[in-house]
Amino acid sequence: MEIKIKVENLTFYYGNFKALDNISIDIEDRKITALIGPSGCGKSTFIRTLNRMNDLIAGTKVEGTILLDGKDIMKNEIDAVELRKRVGLVFQKPNPFPKSIYENVVYGPKRHGIKNKAQLDEIVEKSLQGAALWDEVKDKLHGSALALSGGQQQRLCIARCLAMQPEVLLMDEPTSALDPIATMKIEELFETLKKNYAIVIVTHSMQQAGRISDNTGFFLNGELVEFGQTDILFTKPRDKRTEDYITGRFG
Amino acid sequence: MREHFLKELEILKMMFLQMGEKVQEVICKAVESLKEQNLEKARWAIQLDDEVDKLEREIENKCMSLIALQQPIAKDLRRIGAILKGITDMERIGDYGVNIAKITLSIGNEKLIKPLIDIPKMATIIETMLQNSIESFMKEDIHMAKKTAEIDEAVDHLYKDIYEELHNILSQNPMGANQATSLLLVARYLERIADHTVNICERTIFMVTGDRVEIN
Image 1 (cartoon, each protein chain N blue to C red):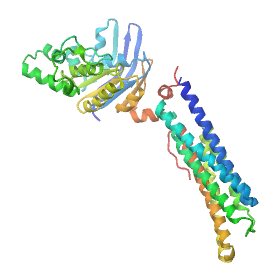
Image 2 (image 1 turned 180 degrees about the vertical axis):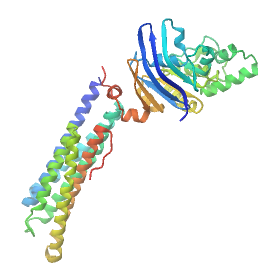
Image 3 (image 1 turned 45 degrees about the horizontal axis):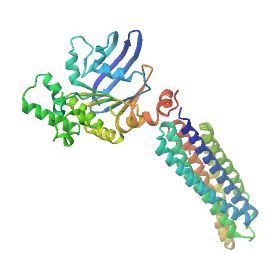
Image 4 (image 1 turned 60 degrees about the vertical axis):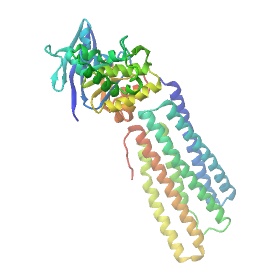
């Protein structure tokens, strides 16, 4: 078991509101970690701390440590832009730029100074193949990304992430806006992606967590109630609150 | 709350209880028919088992649709799993009842080679075990399940006694060989019924705790 991200005693505030309370969790490399819990439980806030996306929100405060390959990413000397290159985030709703498919993929690499056409072409092909989209779009790379279906757009966003050669992929409900077929394609894609990346996925679908993840964490009111192997958490949870949530006896 | 699912689960448990009651009736009637040499009662027991089989299929179908439509997990999944396995045990118990009733029919009105004492004694214990195994399942009472399963040892002892007694009769009275063999089979069926009730008890414990236990 290789730990990619080690979170220790993480507490997070929006103003005076404590959104995360003393979270400790190990994110394994080349494994899928699913985070489940009701809306407002802190799971999205949590994954946004992993690439310091919350830095962009005024009035927030973080305590504790987040070690990426043993290095604390909360330290001031860490370049947040560089960090987000290593830890990519895919959002709930596909959000391609209103540009061509090609331009969407090379946007990040170009901003990081890559100008060589042949090199960019290679990044495009590799990233789109990595996101299982290449075969569907290779003949229309210069067509608008907005003309793609929702599922294709989401895979394009994943490709855009992959173009930065990240080490960790964070996914915030990546399939909640997609139909079952597009969802299945993305879920199958995760299986391939996890050979090269540590993946953390926030999902509202317990079945999805069960289908795709190796480890699952259950968040409630900013607390990580239970974390462990997915097959155990869904068959024999330790905490009654987990059992109540996953079996739908909540609220 | 998953009101609809919980209601369906409750219905499923009631069907399981109903099947349990029917099986108890089959066993009770079958053993009585043997004791009283009542052929009519034996036929009744055999007929009753058809209802047991029908209930088994209905419960199995319901379990399948709940799994497909509601995706139960954790304890809910173990509940449905326990029911799915439990009905197989109960169906088997019903079949043993039918076997006993068929022996009643084959002995007919022929005079018994010995008064039946230990077999009815064994049957009484088994009826209690069966009743309690179903009750412990319904109440999710693991203490009761464990206590019930432990009674199996007494059944095994009785079976051993009956076996030895009938074995002696077989060697001393070849004329009674047919009946002795039949009664030996009855004792064997009863002993197997007890084993199946132990399975139900063990599964109740697994359903509640998630832990596998093997009693006896």
